[in-house]
Length: 283
Image (cartoon, rainbow, N blue to C red; front, top):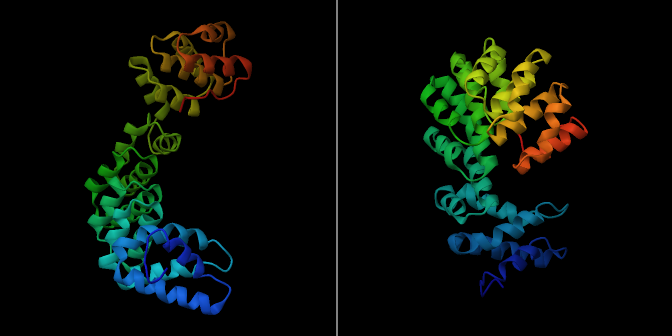
């Protein structure tokens, strides 16, 4: 296997790196080290999955340690390969070692947070950007992060904006699709309930309705009840869910939802009428 270096053989060479016979184990580790250093671009994609899997074994992990040592020693050559491979394990390994070695610039971290396909890399990079942006007073970077579609990144950006004294901007996130972000925006917004009520009176959306229900009380029932007949099916479903959260479902208004033409509204009507529990499909 070491002499022929065929990609389909490499997982088995990795397996032998943890062999219980030390002579086999030693030769396999030496061979894998040599192959990786000579041809990382050709073999890393074949080595990494098995190396990562075996690292979870009690006496495993030798191959992954060889890969990590290679990345540390030749970071500039190997890290870009791992980031291009398209394997989640490779991206995380490259990011983790680069972070440990302090090789990522502020611009690199911002790029990871904005565009990386891996959620763990995005979140870790976003946290690093938040800390550095607050130190630099870089509001523009935090606003960029606050505009991405990933809730974990947005939430960190909002914390950074609040730390820099821009709490007034958080009211725009009262109707965010993420419950966590809605809750944080409410905690930093004066009269959040009043803002919800005013917005719902003008242009109700599912997120506004659920947001109000998350913090409101039964005084909001008269505002929410008529919306179970709204023209938008998503608003009808959210209205039923909101009333259920407030434990104030009027059955004569909720029963017609069972024959609604929109399936999501019917599902919400069933759970609302049957148990007054959370309705599926509504944030």
